Length: 455
Figure 1 (spheres, helix red, strand yellow):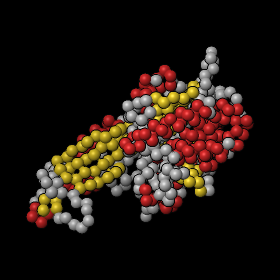
Figure 2 (cartoon, rainbow, N blue to C red):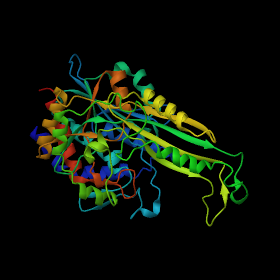
Figure 3 (cartoon, rainbow, N blue to C red):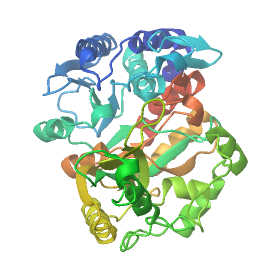
Figure 4 (cartoon, rainbow, N blue to C red):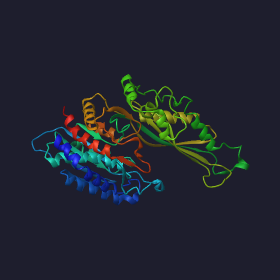
């Protein structure tokens, strides 16, 4: 292994320069004007993969293309097969005025690389490409076959990836999937994320009068939809932070003593978290720590509220309607369809008769859980320990990566979530960055992982 690790160490400046080149593509999947940029980014990746010794091609989809790259296969030799997943599309960079430098002009300051997509997700999957390059370019035999699947639609829901997995099922069938698209608590605590929350999304609209009304002439004689919606939403959470919807917690898998012990090892500090978030006080479900609340408990979150006049000055009206966007984060054993039904039934029950209720369903996905004591998980922990020189931790992630459930259902493979992002890396926010020490450690982790998975 030493020749592989030495290759990684000696080529760090080039790896960083190549990552900067990749980051210059404004591959924003949510904005149609960047369709050509996404195609160009995919073509750059294919060219790069071929240069480092992989067999690579572009796979068209109904949306943005998928990059498929493989390590050379030895004839008449059957090795374990693992898949590495990543995405080359990025979030919109707006608001642009909050960036200190242009989002697609990479800037290095100290050990931080600033650019949109640096941590989410170009820098993280590029660490795995660097690791496999070290094997191929030094002539070091890989103990397994690897396939990279790098898509261009993760930030808009991965609409075409599930179809791709099904149509390439035999080609992609593997022992496990490795994904670096999550985070770690800090640079001294590398982590294996063994669970993700699921999600359901929907919009609630309350309709009152047939049009906006003069509040002086008609106010008091009709129910105000904005007020009715505010009152309705206020009934959905109690003073202890619990969701007041019957059946909401029925299937929630309780945290084990082992899990709570592992959570206690995480370097969390309530005061630091409060400062980082800019809040006067933390709030959450009573009986659980902030770490448990934001990673292992279900939620009901108001993502947006709108009604009536929003311009400058005042406009004295009773608005005709009020609307809110909602997402619920779900935990293992909660069924998205069952929770959606429970929410809808409760909203219909408590909605006042003075307004009309409309509910529009959005996307949904189950939570994900893999045993942290499995052989694959233990191999990942050993690779993290060697690469970072620190004792790794186990953690749950509060966000959702719906495609990992498709990896399990379609390919029958569990996913190892080995994130490299730091909490302060500003993923999805202005001034996104990637820590270059995490980039380098991630390369070592990836190189070591393929050996450890066989032990």
